[in-house]
Length: 172
Image 1 (spheres, helix red, strand yellow):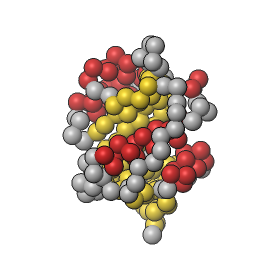
Image 2 (image 1 turned 120 degrees about the vertical axis):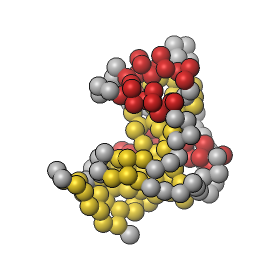
Image 3 (image 1 turned 135 degrees about the horizontal axis):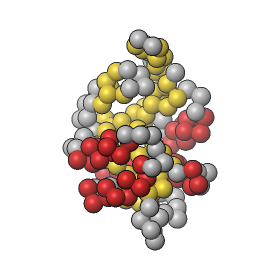
Image 4 (image 1 turned 90 degrees about the vertical axis):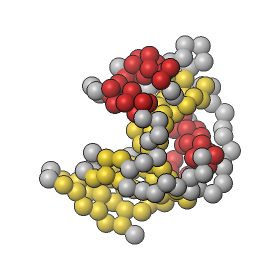
């Protein structure tokens, strides 16, 4: 089961201090993504590079170690409709809406507040690009991301229940 949370974007949020460099990824970061991909599932590197190449649809944001340039946290924003395999459907939305997805922190950097800090940076980035609504899909019992989403103002909109041959949803 997954829950969809929605946030109406109207004001920027104060960015907390983190000990990592914030970066909007581009094609010059392919090597860093290759190294980061070793911690992810098979096939992640190819997906990530394809997303970088389609910068009209996707934007990758990362926290990197300053000295080494190593990605320690990576997440994505979709600006156009996207197929979401977890709920077996395509999320369609207008030009003023974005979808936050695929957040991942390397194991040794967890519990350092990176997810909260990046959530705020993503919101502020979207406001700078004239977006008015953000959506995020979170597993129903994944309490830390849900807590972070609530803290910055996301509210539950619907629940998706997936089963072997499809999915259905209930919501507001």
